[in-house]
Image (cartoon, rainbow, N blue to C red; front, side, top):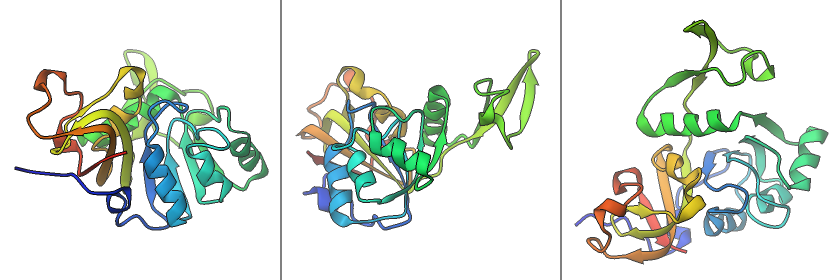
Length: 217
């Protein structure tokens, strides 16, 4: 039987090094992989590019990495409630690429599904369109957007089994679902880890094929 269970968060993050591009699930503080983030802080890796809807708050989530200047670039949809994120962006200490939220989600999903690029009308006629190819569909202009390329994706689920099958609870599914399998290595932390065969297949939101490592947080 395939098992993707690792014994600790340290094992789950084996191979993470400075300069990597990382995806991190969650929306605000809902469904963030807090144990993986804490381990990134402990590892003291830096020069990171982080793809996430936002950057948590000042003293939790990705805000902890920003405090230690471990992130060089944030790719997200809004600055949110993080004063340090705002300060670093406005001062030029942090490179920031702001992306329409739906486009951010679809660039994750495209990477998950092996789709290299897609067209979307979102952002046409704004700064988002700078340097991007455009094309008309049904008389409406669309921008060409490329799927993300990331080294690791870190996601959080409510329950999972040792084969990597995942179930989310409520709105905590958010960006976690499209980020599963969207990077070279997907690490899932779960609140409850159960043996293979325990989960009803009809309730699984993300199949284990998208997950390489899983641990109980």
